[in-house]
Length: 396
Picture 1 (cartoon, rainbow, N blue to C red):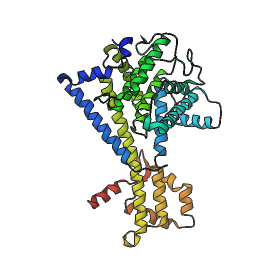
Picture 2 (cartoon, rainbow, N blue to C red; picture 1 turned 90 degrees about the vertical axis):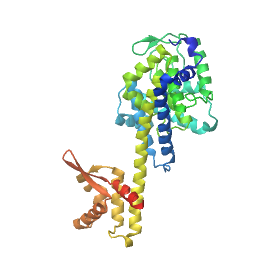
Picture 3 (spheres, rainbow, N blue to C red; picture 1 turned 90 degrees about the horizontal axis):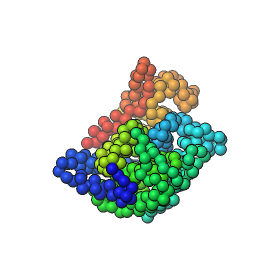
Picture 4 (cartoon, rainbow, N blue to C red; picture 1 turned 180 degrees about the vertical axis):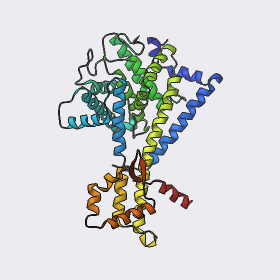
């Protein structure tokens, strides 16, 4: 059982690492090691993928909105992507927000605070108590949670979790002492197998702050944000450094149970292993989004190549076709009849015959630049990225 005096040592990783290298824990060690390697490789692919300002904004925005929905869902606030986006727009216009919208807007402030904080100080980043207080302030301001003051430590005992249990830190003095040691631990430069891994450190930062439970409300959100802060400081998946929230939310019951089990066993290995596996699944998903963006750029570049080199091509394309393919890439997938009657297509083929439009689309199909697919009895049109694979094959 983890007691207050043991918590202040912040040494669970060290004791767990001793256990991890014992022969009977070989499978757990290999599982954690392989996940670390896989995450590093996937993260490196994302870092090395071509991008430029504006090329990945949609991915980052969408993932931030998803993470906000996820971290709020863990706390019991259900809000969808459309509602979150609407809350941002209302906040920009200084319109009154309802409770859910205010929580979403507060979450957005936290993530922007983290990004600005790290971008301005990444080379010599130092964690501080003030950062944790500010994160909590952003999360809980304008919310009037009972027994909570934004950025202020609680001065009463708490019980939390499922099943309910008493918190380790019972008084404000104990909280202040624990937070001071927690910040020292965050700033320590560990080189051990577990302690030296930034994702493991992020997961443990999340756990430790949850266990300290320093505030009257908003502790879970603050702990998950500090976890995201550690990941961003270490340059892990800048596209979505908060994506572990998506995983915790997807397995909310297991998440709460696993957090509670660390208190009983003082052994975080299972939680770390589970968290690494979840993070790997999340970062693989981000990789697919980045890869899709790369394919979009490559397909567009290939279409322009066909236009520039049309004198050497059997099937000759025109500028209209370039614009149509670009539009289809933008939509990604759209109902065929809706696409054909869209304002852009109508304007593009204005004053041209139906047969001209048909010939253009025949050429696009012949070159396998686009494809139509049937789904639930309806036809959709979408880019054909398989064309890129055949081009790569030809090069080899």
